[in-house]
Length: 305
Length: 288
Ligand SMILES: Nc1ncnc2c1ncn2[C@@H]1O[C@H](COP(=O)(O)OP(=O)(O)OP(=O)(O)O)[C@@H](O)[C@H]1O
Ligand SMILES: [Mg+2]
Image 1 (cartoon, each protein chain N blue to C red):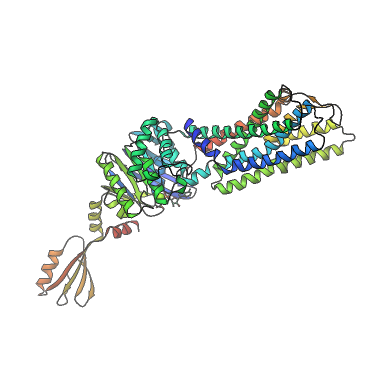
Image 2: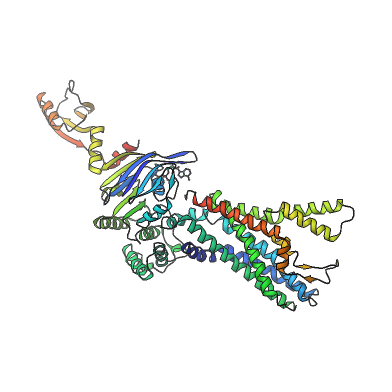
């Protein structure tokens, strides 16, 4: 569906993409995560031929659109016909109404006039802009603009939806509605690729996430797998409270005393049973044992460090 | 191409630049004709009226619409990148060349409308002066407008190049204004001064010698100022053998162009060069 190989993009002095490799399979909802300036937007703009990378390969919907340092515009146009794109901080034409905007965009795809009108109505209702369909976009709030941007990305019923930070500027209700739209896309068998720097935004809707840091893909995979992988690397943390101090010498765990009879134990895996047995062997009673699972936010911060 | 055209056409007609500049120009026309009428415009012959009309429109419309063209071009691309509309447009199945081609066509049409409007005001002004209109009017006015349009297109294309080089549209606007003043006022005046000095140095310069010198210098040193090149051409629409410009003979636009083919060629050539450079840069640039 979408494949990026060894993509390099250098702006004057910034190496924004540094041999980036990434693949999105048909039907996936892929969350593209990364801190500010990591290269998310650059990746997306490169996919659509809006910026020119220097090296690498891009395959979109089976078309080899970029290779040997150049775009094949014919193939790009062919691929774009089946793509919906929502840019980050963009406005649409201020002098047009939502209805006119969708009409103009629909025309770019060669959708017949009556069909465009029908589709525009559906989409404006979907994003809750139907009441303001005849108001000028220039008078819209940030969130309303964002909704219209989403609507225009859906006008051609795209097979691949590419969204750059689609949830910024939306209120909680808007975010919930947006997530619902993504879920519907997934149900319809569409592929979605969207970027965010907020983990909570991708958590509920994405089946796969990739984390880009400094132009390179750091981690990729299923969210649960990433979590497990992280736990394996970062260690498994247990907070233990006992009635008497315990002598932990001779164990392989990393133990930090937190108080008189309170410890933090970090081990490469789940060692609750072992800890239980070890403490019992010293005749000490366990008052409390707590497993500390890192939050997604913590994992994310660790990964981008 | 049609898609980009329609969008840009609607957008251009809504810009303040267009109407502000057209407004200023119209305001300037009124006192000019009024003054001429007050001070002996009555006995204007048809020949003199045509010559005046053509040279006046060349000077005024060339200057004002020239500035408009340059400003329009200079903000055409960068402002759309700033707003983000260009990224939306170019994410659709539209080729870059088709898009910029459509945009260019829209700008040309808008400029042509502006030129025709200003010519119309000019014609009304001549009628107001009470000068008899000759039958050649329509043909020559159209020829003049085509020539001026070519010059305006060159300025738009130059603007496009600015727009791809300067990232910020407000900086580009400033740069275009400076460029307009340099091109339309400063450099032509320097060249006129050079002509004046050269003429002073020669022993016994005649009027036609100086005119010829002005033409040569303009051709040589102002080849990048399309309005000056049009000026060279239109200076030949009317000619008079006596120094008071009394018995003016009207030669017409066709004659003027045919007699200044070099200048015509310069306008066409420079326009092509700017267009090719501007379009090429647009098709290869990062839209962010
Ligand atoms: N036009 C430009 N000229 C120079 N450097 C640029 C340009 N655009 C982006 N960059 C740099 O490229 C890098 C990647 O930027 P990009 O916008 O792709 O990041 P991002 O992951 O989308 O960040 P954000 O979360 O802030 O949107 C950054 O270091 C940025 O400073
Ligand atoms: Mg970004």
